Image (cartoon, rainbow, N blue to C red; front, top):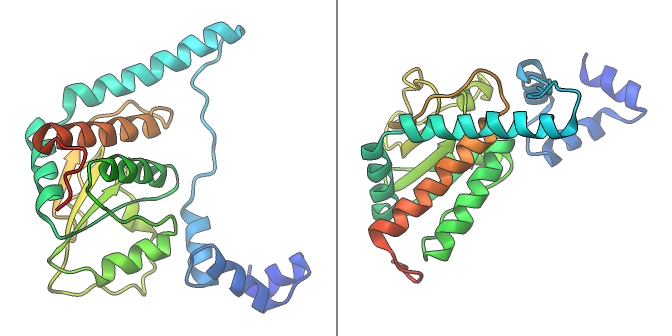
Length: 222
């Protein structure tokens, strides 16, 4: 569908569609189409028993298994290295898309309680713009369970060849396909999407806990 098709179906002018795209943090209608074409709008159930009590137990078991997989597979060395970067870099941002951004916001709050200020933004377009303007003094953490964070970029997006920021991606898969990802904190996961937000939130909590263990002070501002 074109902008005119959508505008006609919604009984508005084409300009209203363009303004809507910008209001939700996108560059334009083309980026909206790209996101819709790649999005997976499918809810996944983790419990199929007839009893509510059994469904609660099944769901809880699946979440517990997902968290246990993180505990067993997350690199302790890389976790500490990431926390040292959080301490040493001048500017820090934490990003994610959809549910992953809620994890970024929670980590921002935890670090703030220890006097470490980090930036985040719900809008994906604003996140990308921040990354594009960042330099060598910037550290960026990206939560992306499947490692697809940069897959949603418009082909028109340009990246500076030099002076790039250091980017950590927290993901359950190898992220070498992105030449702008510097380091990865990788973990294993069960098939499906049920445990995804819990695994990422657990890792965000581990980052905060480890940071406090290394630099522990409730007023540890630079």
